[in-house]
Length: 222
Image 1 (spheres, helix red, strand yellow):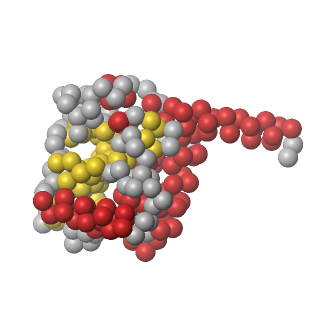
Image 2 (cartoon, rainbow, N blue to C red):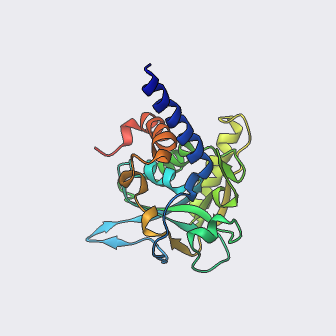
């Protein structure tokens, strides 16, 4: 490796380390949007919603977008006590909210069980209030169920994973009823696709996305 190449390599490692420390706290402020999202139906197409939290919502969003049958993935904040929270407020860990995604999907093309499988592949459900270097209750692992059937299916799946010792440590993912979901600021939406060269995307999201695509290669969008 040339001297110049070595410097670029060291710089890349440094940026990756720095961005891993910053995690999702990087980004300029933007206008706040708030809304509640629920199941919907458009043009005869039945859609439903699944809501998951598992670390930085940039990562979960990028992976869930790959699945056939997923119509839209919306990043936001839920599970807390503060109304209309801003990103900066959520990052303090004082609002009670988790970074989460609403996954709008077509039940005719993808079922809730497959989404659960994808969720437990997309993050490490044994890490309490963190994912890697993203630390805090806003990064906790939660399934926000929309009805009793989702709660039952999610609990069954968690029990099975624990019984089969799929992970070396017990799963810490919580089950909580779905409540108000506040859509995150514009710059958080579709983040990976719009910022593929950003260092967090290159050094954190891309490796996770590659593993995800390998596992779900038969269920990806064409």
